Image (cartoon, rainbow, N blue to C red; front, side, top):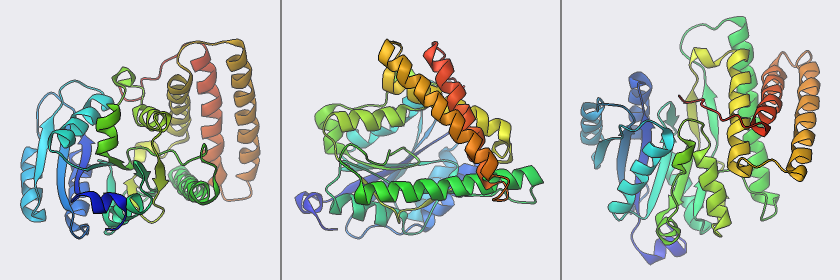
Length: 326
């Protein structure tokens, strides 16, 4: 490793993931982490937080630790809600005196060079928070026509987001940076110690606490970067491959984003901005709906999510709070 952070002190990275009731997916994540390359000269340990009433993953984590040859712990966070579990992992990494904390999701599989490339980009840019792209993987077995349409749309959306974030990283202004979320995330813990940053636990079931963390870090002067070649893959369950789910996901993401950015006060300027946002999303959804006729349905998911974003913004304007993860 090179860069200012690498020269200052030996690096210790804690790799963390949260899980709840998804044993098969969590097992696949552990398998990918067991095969992952480790950065040379860097101490790597693992922390897995189960957000449930009782700890069930302890044996799996012990077996993983023996296979990987690294320290790995399983922690219980009985208070339900993603930010509570994220803060549990964050506090563990701080207590261990680690230099960095990485997050992935329990329904993902990391590529072999994921951590090496993520950390290399992070150190070379002297960043405080670094993210990378996520690409979908289809579930095992045959898919229905509509499931195939949804999968093609989500794959196209992921490629588009990755291209957009890479362009922002290369050409964007200081205020326009890729949003870094915990599906592929690495933070410098000295910055967290200096600023006392935590995930906002008021966002218990709504989602968006990682986006709120990103904006809080930026607001405190934190620098971010994007590692385009540090790739993780999300395994898509069949129940997400439906237009109904994609509409609801767009709706709930819009509500969560609105609450994170604007809180609960609706004033005149925000009302006008929100009306413009809703109008733009509805127009964009209509354009993508027409394009879907020409591109084999790939734009259909994007159209449905745009409609969901517009509806979610309307609900958020009138006080609706998302409980997507309840």
